[in-house]
Amino acid sequence: MIQVQPFDRLGRFRNEWLNAHYHFSFSHYHDPERMGVGGLRVWNDDEVAPQQGFDPHPHRDMEIITYVREGAITHRDSLGNEGRTEAGDVQVMHAGTGIEHSEYNLEPTPTRLFQIWILPARRGVEPGWGMRRFPKAPGSALAVLADGRAGADGTALPLYADAAVLAGVVRRGETVRHLLGAGRAAYLVPASGAVTVNGVALGTRGGAAATGESELAIVATEDAELVLVDVVA
Image 1 (cartoon, helix red, strand yellow):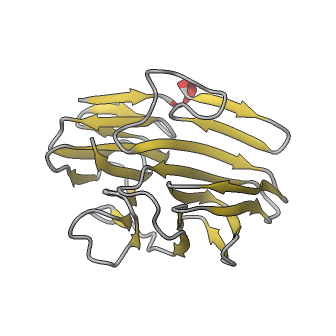
Image 2 (tube, rainbow, N blue to C red):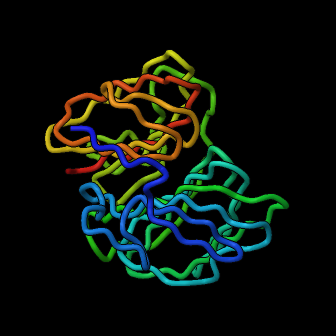
């Protein structure tokens, strides 16, 4: 089954520096029908104004993935990590036993990103952070950016969750396929462009939840940049 949530039906929050859209219930936005997909609990679509950002704040027992769509975000945390993640790249933070971090847009233009939270497979792991740059050329398959599934080959950023984050660029008229194992689900968002997912239309920055499907055939109806999370259903 493919269930689509169009961008204009997402939850919303806005202040003087943050323009946020929520795919699932988060903060003051609550919809009992939008509580996540399996272990995927948060997918926020954030626009952060220049020279602004999230002040230091704590997390525990969550895998937090940031995919930057435009601009860059600068991370600092209580472990002494610091790094700048730019468009098309990804960072992963393991909150584990506890970590405090800040995320700032130190660029001259707005930064747009997806922040994704996935429940860990076990609690109390050692906290940590990492980022990686990935190829951005179009291909016939989505690249694995972060992976905690059984059999992960170690080429992606690690996750303490039975989940994976994938991304890629697909040209209009081309198809990419993603296999889903038994008992698994996926959530797909086009950061740009539009696609069909097993024949169901999905527009820019909307989300498609796939459950009970063994394979996803993703056809680009426009040039599209895709981000997909594969999780236990």
